[in-house]
Image (cartoon, rainbow, N blue to C red):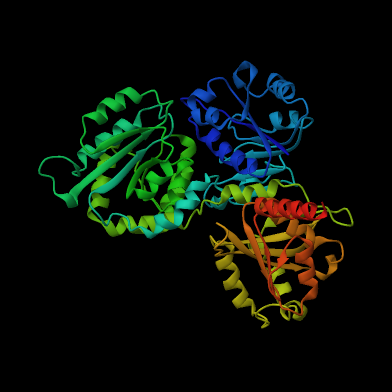
Length: 529
């Protein structure tokens, strides 16, 4: 499979579009996909991470322009065999460009957060908080799948990896207070300087200042990108401030966020990184397209929003820092509310929607999609079928109220994925993954599967099990069945699971399974010789 990403970066635009595309590209590369980038000149300078990632990159003729014939011809010329997926993350591209790419791209995905222009795409991802399908009514084709909300936020895997430890750490309970200042990779207006002004005016003493009381001191980490035009000016300013350190394009930004008590940050894509780690934020709006995001986060009581509309922005930052330093419980409240908004698994969820169907006996194929609130009634119908409940660990049929509570809790849980099995265009069953501990695998899930009676016999269940292996090759799967459920046991064994007890089956991560198969083949050949 091949995916080509169309995104740009510049000192004015910033690097956010490139960075979230890199996150998805890395996730797909983990499945063995071939990924490439098509960018305007200067993008790799503004987003050095693109060059470091090593993906095949095409610098488009004419600077990227408005996406006319010259740009589409550059794509065809560089990748003459076309692409399985074209991923467009660009505010200056719309339906015209996407339609022109249709003969070259088998499918098109758009990453957007404005909902302000028409698109010709098969999937649209908008990670904005509380984004509703109605926002894209009339802007996407009828068959377009919408991936909306923060559970699809494209974050690098280290954020989810640090989430548990970060949320266990109480914010602002130790001295000195750790403050992180990170205002984008390029910060074209040098808002970082205003943030430093605000820190100096806040009344907080910088760690290392003579005669400062430990409980009222702050250490500051300032982060700028390698493409920031103000690097030298900021470096000189930081050098004169005790307790303040400058980091240029750090590789450990996630770890820095996890250890910080408070951040000064913008309302762009980095918002979801901070939410994932429960990092309280004094939030600034640095561009018009960030305004709605900032409003939603403020309404969710997940950030302290400042805008300086009534005066100096540095004074507004100073006031917010002073207030939060005086009220450490407010810091923890911000952390709790922020953490509830994003779990950092958006790239994993997104790549499920990009997988090709698994074949079935009738040729209709099987795909999986994440369940939504509209699936509650369908799931309840299956859970109330006596034939299904008799084969469950808990045979008691749930009431509608019990099912509603269970579904609401599990639908948004960090440790659970509920997917709907689609057989052609019809919903044919449910496959649920619940995280479990496994001493031999870094990540493991228990698999539960239900196939509707009308779709049995076509290989739907087997296709669904193969699809989750294609989706999550890095994890181990476990299944538990009743000993008398011979049909289910046979299904899992056919899908490559090993029966480790009368009612337990196990499937190791794909790489480990391949190594075991190679070893077993070698042993058989050795014995034959």
